[in-house]
Length: 433
Image 1: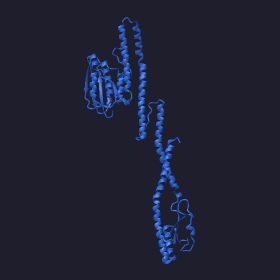
Image 2: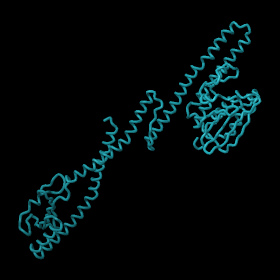
Image 3: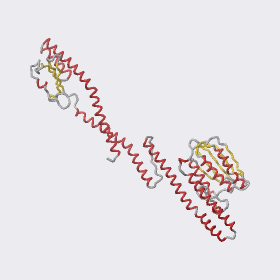
Image 4: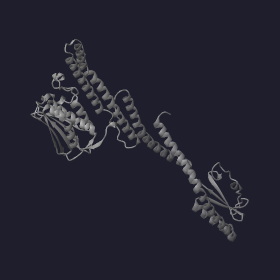
C-alpha cells in the first residue's frame, strides 16, 4: 500500500479494533469475577431458603417460592436432589445437571442457559434455566455504525494530513522544474504548517540567490561590453600614440571605470544576497546621516557643495545597519555628483504617524518628469553622454539604494523639488520593519 491516506485509515481502524478487544478483555477480567461472586452468593441464599421451606412444609411450601423466583427473575427454577430428581414434581432432570457446555459461556439446554447451584450440605441442587442476557448478534448493526463513523472520521483525519503533503509535493516538483516563485499556501500552525513555512523560506532564499546571480550575469554581460571595447581601443591607440603618458592616463581611467562598475555590481549582489547573512539591529537614523555626511565630505568639498543635516527623528529603525548606511550614502553621492557648485545638499530625517522618512535633496536641474520612475533602474542614465564624462557614474547608485530599502520593507521615490531632485526613503514603523 503506497497511499498514505489508506495507511492512516487502516491504522486508525486497527487501533480502534485492538483497543476495543483489549478494553473488553480487561473489563471481563476485572468485572467478571466480581459478578460471579455476587451471583453465587445470591443463588446460595436462594437454595438455602428453598431447603428450609422444604424442611418446614415439603413441596407444597417450596412450589410458591419457585413461582415467585420465576416471575421476579424471568427464568425457570427447579429444586432437585443430588441425583437430579425434581423435589416438587418428581421429574427426572439429570439431563440438565449434565447439560453440554459450549466453547464459551455456561452450559446450554436449547436456547436457555443452565446454571446449577448446589446446597451447602450437597443434598440439593437449584437448577436455573434462563434466556441469554445478551445476544451478541443483536449488537452487530451498532458495531457497524460505530466502525463506519470511526472510518469516516479517520478518512477526514487522513485527508487533513495527506492533502497538504500532496500540495507540498506538487510545489516541490514545480520548484524543481524552475518555477522559482512557487510557494505553499498554508495557514496551519501545526508541524505540517511549519514544514510549509520552512519550504517557503527555503524557496525564497533560493529564488533570491538565483535571481541575484542571473541578474548579475545579465548586468555584467550587458554593461561590460562598452568599457571593454573602449579599453581595447585605448590599448590599440597606446601602441601607436606619440604621447605615451596621455595614453597610459587614458588606460588608467578606463581601468578605474571598469573597477568601479565591477564593484557596484558586486555591491548589488551583496544587497540581494542570502537573507540569513544580514544583521538585524536597532539603527539610530541620525547617527547614520551624520556618518554618511562625514564620509562624503571630501566629495562635497571637491564639488564646492555643503552638506546640511536636519534630524528630528525620535524613533529608531530595525534593520541591517550596513545596508541602510550604503543606501543613504549612494543617494547622497548621487546628489553631490549633480549638485551645482556652492549649493547645499540637504539630508533630512523625520517621523511620520506610521513611518520614518529620510530625504536627500540637491539644487541641480532636476530630471524630466517622464524619466523619474526609471531613475532606480539598473544602469539607467538621464543622459547617455555622461557615460563618457569624467565624473559620470555607472547607473547603479540609486538601484543599489532601492534594493537595500526594499529589503527593509520600505520604498524609494524621486521627485523634482524645483530646484533640484529630492529622493525620499520611507521605512515602515520600527515594529513592522
